[in-house]
Length: 126
Image (cartoon, rainbow, N blue to C red; front, side):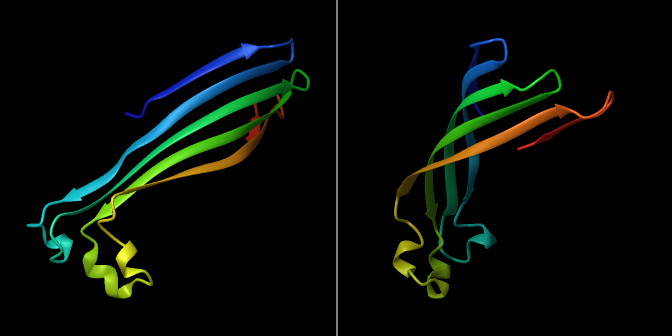
């Protein structure tokens, strides 16, 4: 289960501001050196952890349509071990495996629309 939280506040009859934070975890593998899948390189595995924060503004255009925008801030950590057997295939063999944990920040945005197209059909784009 990945943790998440959010807060939403209506700032006018047609607008809201909110913020959400969510994480992606459990994106990891670990194999003991006894497993055949490690290609003789001993203990092998990867670990990926991610955190996203998305403040959001929404505007209800009319009774049937709404739009929103969210700048997205992301933080990520990654590590890999036991991939030494693939070093000959890499352009940077010393940077492939067993170098600890690396981290990175990322930024982006998301636009969205949601609308009532007919009495029985609702659509959305993101």
